[in-house]
Structures are given as C-alpha cells and as structure tokens.
Image (cartoon, rainbow, N blue to C red; front, side, top):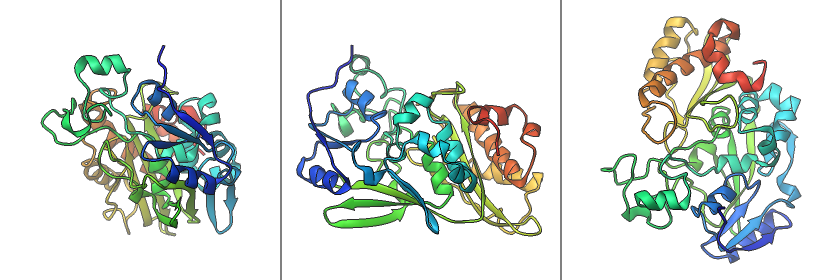
Length: 347
C-alpha cells in the first residue's frame, strides 16, 4: 500500500485565509482543491508537503457568473461545469474538454483550477517510489532534481514531462485570463502566460499565490476540443486540439485561436495567420494542419508510438477546423468518434 508522508492539514475559510496560510506555511506548503492530482502524487512521494491547505470550504472560490464575461471560481468542480447549459452553449470547447476529463466520479471532486495547475506527466515519473528508485530517479523527482538524468532525452539538460491538462488548451483558445491572489494583492494574466515550457518549473504562479478565478471574454466564436487517448474515458490526453474561430458573412475567418495540448511541457499556441481572411476550404485547412503540427514533437514520455501521435496532430487539427466550418461530424469518420466519444453529441 502506498502512503503519503506525514503532513499538517489546514482547512481555509476563504481565499484570503488560504493566502495567509500559504504565506505563513513555508516553502513546503501546498494547496489542496479536489485532490485528484496531488493526493496520488503524495502517495508516490513525488510531492511531500509539510503543510496541506484545503480549499474545500472556500465558498468564494466556487461560482459561475455571466456578467459581460464568464467568471468561474477556481474551485468549481468539473461536474458543475459540464452540467451548466449556458456555459456549454457559449464556450463549447471548455464543455468538451471538461466532459472528457477522467470519469464522472473524479469530475465530481476535480476542480477547474486544479486541472489548470495539473502536474506535468511522464512515463518515467508517474510511477511508484520503488519503481523510480530501481531505475534511478529522474531529474523531476524531488530526490534528485536537476542533478539527475532525463530518461526521455538523456543528453538534455531539461525535463520533458508533458502538460496533460484538458481545460488549459480549451480556455487559452477562448482567450481566458486567470486571477492570482497573494498578500501583495491580485494580478490577472492571460492563461497562456501561466505556463512555462519546463517539465519541472511548469507554472509561472508564485509559491505564495492562489489561483482564484478564470475569466472568459464574451466572443462570438465557434469552438471545439478534440482529445486523443487510448481509452474512451479516464485516460489523460496524449494529444489535445482546441480551436475557436469567428467566421464573417462570406465564410472568411475573421478571428482564430488554435492550441495544442499534451505535446510539450506547456500548451502550445499555434500561428493562425495563414487562416485569417481566408475561407475554410479543404486545401487551406490541409495546408494549415501541416504547418501547425510542426510544434508537436512527441517524445517517448507518454502513450502510443511517437510517429503516429505526430500524424494524429495533423489529422486532429484538420478535423477540428472542419467541424467548426459546419461539417457534419458523421462525415469526419473514425477520428471524430475517437475525439468526441465521451461527450455524446457534438453540439
């Protein structure tokens, strides 16, 4: 049986109380929201906090408001997001992403803020303590850190663990911003700026900050999220494609954002300049998908063969744009079924 190391436990009354506890808890204080990521990590001794600060009673972090923009509290559960019909209609990519996270039971506990701050993953890291000890700990392990080797790319000086959040690519495509609270006050940043391309130091959130809310602007866009994984439920993504487009009266692309997930240590925002002002024809989509898949450089740190995952990046980029131009998903073949089977009907 895997057991966490000893730790102190504190239940914060609200966001301000959590900030104060985090500031006074020292360098090994950590936050607990739904616990679906940090608790398994603690049992595998990948994270060993001395103080665990629970947010479960912080009611001010659990709300969804529509007031010119959509504001979502960081401790709102994924199940609450999936059940919200207005959010599904206005921000379909977020609905599609959250509906495909893990299983219904896990979504009942998992929170949006927790999914955004999800620890990066790797085949050589997400194992129990004894397994990792047997091959010698990698540089991401707390036992070794930077002095050790990266088993994915042994000659590399950095960690290549993968960002596996489903909600992050979807929210970045929707232009979301996040608010972070500390004793120094609040700061709001674009969600893409929350991430660093580093498997160990993957968040730009300071140790004394609490992510309190996510804000999505009201934009007249169509959006979607396609996810590749081995099973139709439970599994983390080995590829995620989030896309949002606004089409003009003649079907020309007036605005677009496309984001790749699970292909690097952070979500990858794709250059969409070749789409702007153009119609979404098969030829333009194919050319865009070929170019946009270039940042997807899969390594041997997750499921499936690397070459096939690269091919799927092109296919999913093309399929998501064809869906957004209005194609019947049934005509998109088995790729659409694989990408959307957990969410039922596409619209």
